[in-house]
Length: 216
Image (cartoon, rainbow, N blue to C red; front, side, top):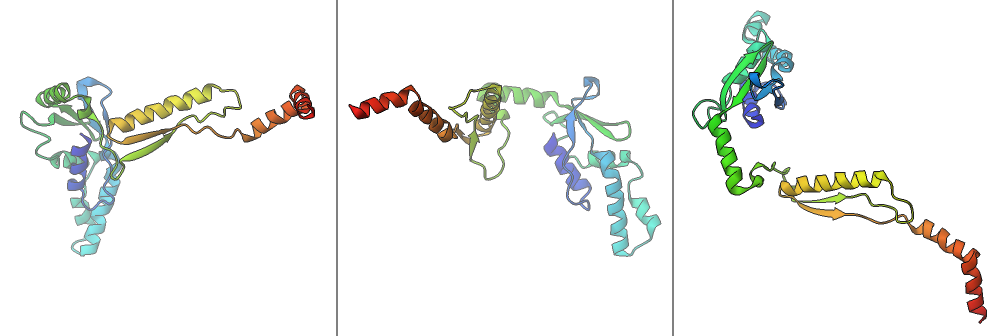
């Protein structure tokens, strides 16, 4: 869904740079659809400014003509986004989206196509959950995740457990995306503590035993 709206935003408003990231989120109420695109309201002023600047650069017409080509409301922006959706995303039995509509000041509500959902479920059943894995960032094939790295000369506490769980969760997510993960749990910062322990042994009963051994 994000990819479809990303393509629509780039196609509908090529003069707006950089191309806005699609603001897609699940609908709070299922009766309105499965997902909602909320770019229209935030884009409205940017699109107006881009249209006005384009008219001024060409020198054809003044502000009135620029305003005619610019959207008059966020709903106009939403309609432009809808019109620019890829043909493969909307329409047809196998399409990603079964329906799309504009609500309120410019919210775009969409509902996934039944056949598309059935196809994705069948693919997961046949090929495993890896079908749903996100694509790793370009060039990322190996990652190092540093775990809790406890100081073995001190007591452990809940912070070590927390960071261990976070580290393992990140590792699993990266592996799910096809990234080779190196789990690192560095044990360090123990030199001073063990030096103090050895000194304590030397100054206490351990020291007396050592002196007796040396005298013998």
